[in-house]
Figure 1 (tube, rainbow, N blue to C red):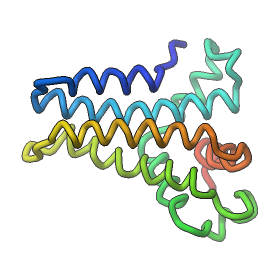
Figure 2 (figure 1 turned 180 degrees about the horizontal axis):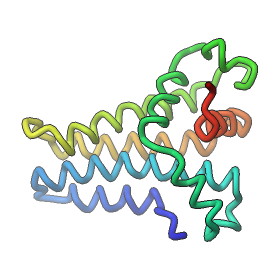
Figure 3 (figure 1 turned 135 degrees about the horizontal axis):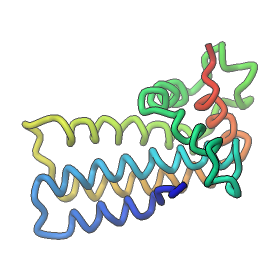
Length: 165
């Protein structure tokens, strides 16, 4: 399975922004910034639950493809709260998710909203600075997620792949 490298999506976004960009380029740049963070999440989940050495297997593809935009947003909406919902407490990290995972979740929500606007709102006008900021936010969020406490990161991925009912 060919894994999408988030850094390649971020680099693509920067190339699209390089001047003089058209609105279509700026819109695609914002979309690429969001998809960079989205695919980083899918890769982290599949790497954790199936393993990096099994990236070419159907099991890996199953985990990777089992996560959709709505479920990621739903989890992130819970994670950004300073305390976990009661239903998460028996399974979640002791002191909620901490600032890095919360910042990651907030970035996912923000970038997903911007991507939807960029892709579908015919009235929106995007500036180069907006697109550059989106790429910066996405890169920073991915870095924070990767460097956070492993227990918190795994808890986030577990809730994502195995949603609490």
